[in-house]
Image (tube, rainbow, N blue to C red; front, side, top):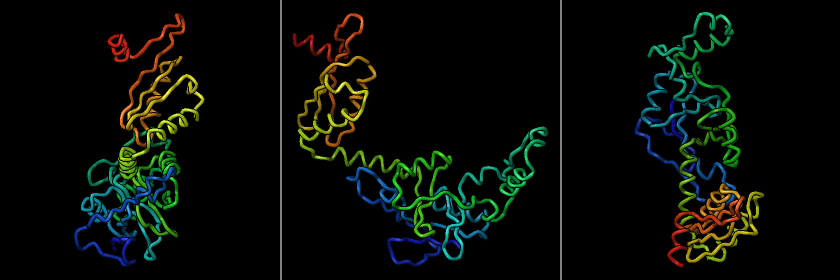
Length: 278
């Protein structure tokens, strides 16, 4: 049984005898400081049951242009996941894992048996990862990314009461980043609000020379003035300004105080501007 379920529509199963339409849905809550899985996940579930053949699962992934399939029982509960990585080491393609005889000798029989099942298995149940890591719609993106990094996985099934309702992948996270950037650029924050946000961000960090930095904003264009004692502070200050909603452009007028001579050293373009001015 191979079915598609769109949880934004009626709760009915649509069998995949026709082409799969992209019904990915991205929630638009970019104004929230803490983004959740629901903000970027794909609200589409293409799943298989454990007895489906590995070949059919691979064919479905290619046709649907996806890299992972939740595996569900007949009640719709998540029991595993099969991904493109499960098809890398296959007997059919001659890519089964080979070890030196001495290394095979010290590898546990259980490990060798598991690898054999995965590379020779004909059913999804024989090659899938059982009881995979999952998230819910309310999980923060920070927690989801931590989970992906900790377990070295590229996608997470999103579940509701044990049933898959979507997927969160690295591509979803990238789209969320792009959407957030667009949202920030289109913000029409007043100049005074932009200045306050930049200064507030700098005050939050111990590395920031907040008392020697001044900010001027005009129509979204930011000019940063002041002095620093470490050249690395410059980049961090500029990044803080660029990430502030409503900022269109940042100009760097910050001077580095040379520790030995006490001389002020400006960026080359700022040095030229000052020379022309004088």
